[in-house]
Image 1 (cartoon, one colour):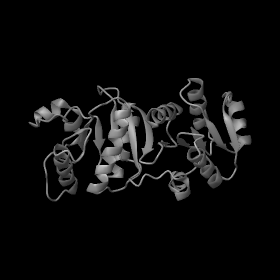
Image 2: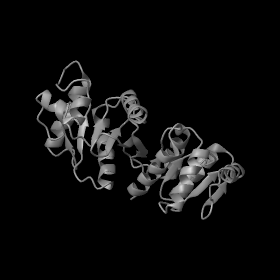
Image 3: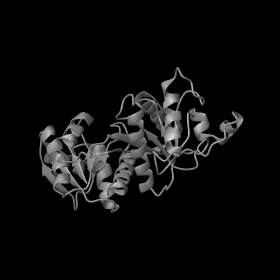
Length: 280
């Protein structure tokens, strides 16, 4: 894994721990002096870690991407730079990492009072996805679920209500996605919606409302209608329920490890592991 602009304390804590655990080999790209200074101060081991000194942020991002392009690395992690800066390097035509589809963000949560891992998409990339984009977002998330050995993940397109309402576009999209899945246009998963959040994750709530569905109360993947909904729900899971999380961007030739700058070293470590599991 290459790390773009690696001179960040929390990133370095996660990266050095991942190397120590044998999850991944790492190439750090960034200000070598600052990287070494942080690691010495915090007692992080740089054994078996290669450092490429590049103080310029834009050039460091480009170099981290180049390492993937030329086969020296298999995926990328965001360090001390903006998401837009890193994605600009990833999407540069010369990098040859585009697949022609849609890049979307997938978060995976371990929620204390939920029976299994919960996937949330897209709270980090696509602001207001239309139906065609939602299809691609689902396909990206399903690919990650398959990488975690979830053979037929259950997808709940979330809405404010669980019935189709012509004045609420999200419910129309949810019904369309459900029908497309039933006709084999979206494969590798089970989709049913529209579903409100309570019906998607609580069998008791679904039963109370008379909803009979393979997905209701047992969702693996929550498809949110907008980036705000995903951001709010994700941060609520983290801060209110104490959920552990991992996050990556998918849709390019390699995963991009990307979580919030405020996320813990543990979250970043889990994200590194998730990236390693999803590399093809």
